[in-house]
Length: 522
Image (cartoon, rainbow, N blue to C red; front, side, top):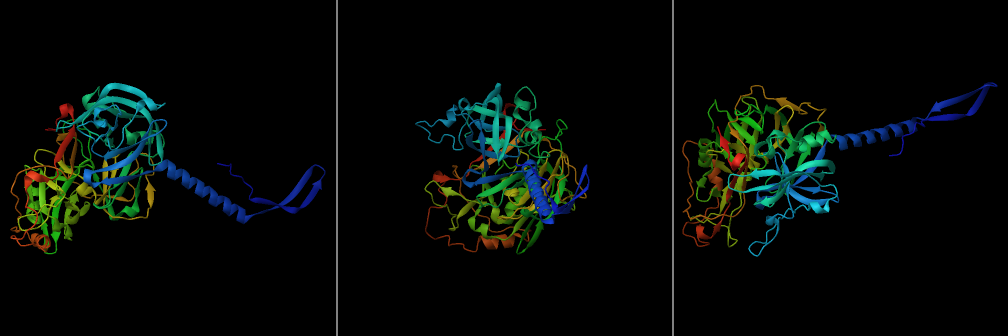
């Protein structure tokens, strides 16, 4: 940038010679020039603050694949790739072009849709951990390979010598951008135990953001894009108060390794009333995880939700089914955190109803003629309580890795304006956030980084029924009225009701990174 000058002083035309060795010049201030210079300096400084304090990344919503992805580039010259964003893991890794899964075969033409990385084409590539990268999942899938350093770019920001995983073998064809705590990196669990600067820490180390924190805005179910903002919050993306709650450590090692918060309330509201589905002393550890497509609730609480909505879980399918007409409901499930006075996030039932298709391309129907969809909630069973994308879409979530705090506000969908407020400094508190006044303490008893995804394909052989009534739940009537508003005659003709041998519905893939690919509950 051209050097700023200081020429806001103008000489008068009159020169007065006081004596032979001195010259006197009468001068006056040029106010217009001074104002122009001040405005230029403000714009310049504002540009520096924007570049140095926040990094805004647009996210794509791949609904059919059950993930949110970001576009990145790796190497010199830059190679373009697409990776899934995951707050529940800590490593950025990309598939290698030499990985068998990225090479189409006679049996499979899928390859790696998000692209693959060719280290031989990058002049800045450096292998820093041959055969040291190893991530495994409970369903038997995983990736192995090397740790490497290279130039990494995202959202207009570039990180030099950034450490990542390069998957040369494995069964996962899309890279993952893990942005959790760096003490949960795969190398800590399956390698030599060393910790490196993962993405939030590398952004700080290279002066791109002031502190290890970011805000997540997934937008609604039908929106094609959302965003993650590193180093700040966007006040236009939420409404009301931004409430702040604690992130709690694991009982196993006393360290904070996942975004575990105190989940203290769930209620249901419809046109016919409101029901509180949790007892007064309810407080459980729940992980806020963008790598999880659905939401896993305590089994007893999930059963009450199913009773409210007329849903039923089918174990052979690994999915919870509801009438598609439930998406027309104006009702909500209301999640509370941190005890009395803590943030409450309302999740519209319409954002919980996910598509379901037959292999023929048709929508399956119940025996009474209603179309069937998946519900984005299941019982957790032995897995931890996971609040995934079917919750996070309704929450503006701020992840503060330094102070171990989470900010939660009611999201505003499809907003196009922006008002970015950067964190003031390293370790500064979440801007505009109010701490929950009566925080309930919980302990995380699970280890590992869970990931649960769902896509519209699976098989099964069950007879499907719909529960049209529920007892003792005043809000259920409002949900049922919506779900049955376009009910067809049970004797009507149409597609064969749930001929499961030909049905493709969402297979739920339970995955977690941990020693030996097992998720451990202590």
